[in-house]
Image (cartoon, rainbow, N blue to C red; front, side, top):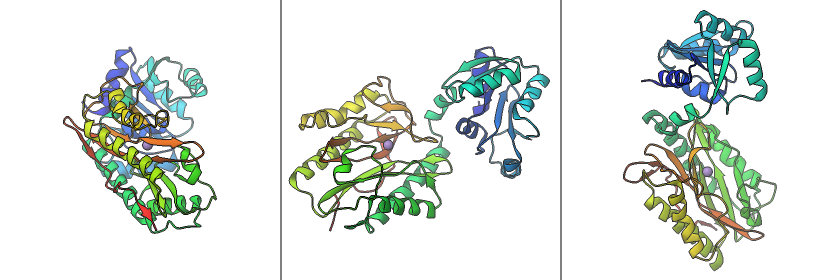
Amino acid sequence: MNKLQKVYEAAKECGAGAFLFIDNINRRYLSGFNSSAGALVVDKDSGTLFLDFRYYEMATIKQSKGLLAEGLEVVLQEGSLFGMVCDLLAKKDIKKIAVDGNRVTAFELQMIKEKLGVEVEIKTGVVEEFRKIKTPEELENIKRAQAVTDAAFSHVLGFIREGVTENEVAAELEYYIRRNGCTLAFDTICVSGTNSSLPHGVPSDKKLTMNSFLTMDFGAAYDGYCSDMTRTVVLGEADDDMKKVYNTVLEAQERALAGIKAGITGKEADALARDHINACGFEGAFGHSLGHSLGMEIHEGPNFAWSYDKPIPAGVVMSVEPGIYLGGKYGVRIEDIVYVTENGCENLTSSKKVLIEIK
Ligand SMILES: [Mn+2]
């Protein structure tokens, strides 16, 4: 059964004749076409993708190359989008539709109900459930994105020096990613010295100073698929306390990487890293969860978190990112992404993790 058929089955389960998608992410995932506007109606026959003039020609070109979902009908939007969806539903005698409640605003839901004049069933998480398990093609896109991310890190090591600002380091990473055929998966985090204790700190005009940490959390996206990576390096030399913090984070990550495989719960995976950090005297300093899934979005489910007590299936891509944050002092985070398999996990990140001191 293909993606569209699976979505129709979910609609049928609640007595609906079609599933309507107006959000960009799930519409792209199901149709294979990326646009900032449009509607996808999935019914028993297949899918109908309504696109306006800005996207229609591009979609027909992609379809002629076999790059869109099989059996998809691409229709040029003339007049109102909801008016055209309404006509299609009437033509197919569909009186009830399903809509993803997580993916429409309250206003859009009101419009859908008013303009389409059909019964609306709110379903959530149907497509997100399919998206958890990556196909070989999706995994390949993530690997390509991560390869560019790793290369950006190697590149930026030659750029980091005393007096350069956090903003300049972030820009250098982002420029490299763009020049190498990718877009940004999320806003780059680049924090130095005392700012590095802020897990999601924003880069500033602060100049890098000697003998302090610099944490960079960044990622490229290739053909809509995200990568994610964090490295903390030292400009100059690390003192013994800094080395202890760094090595504790690294050991915690290695323990987690060694234990992750299909069937482990999110809570168990999180504990592999957290217990070590706590045992080394840093209780309370690892203030976020171990990791998240990623794909078309940078944060997807499932999670490696104390609050996620369900088993992690094979076929998901997850981040593994322990950290220690000492407020007012500094912080360290090390993040790789892995593909979870039956017997373990494949690390998709290739950058080395031994503490780098840039002299
Ligand atoms: Mn992450």
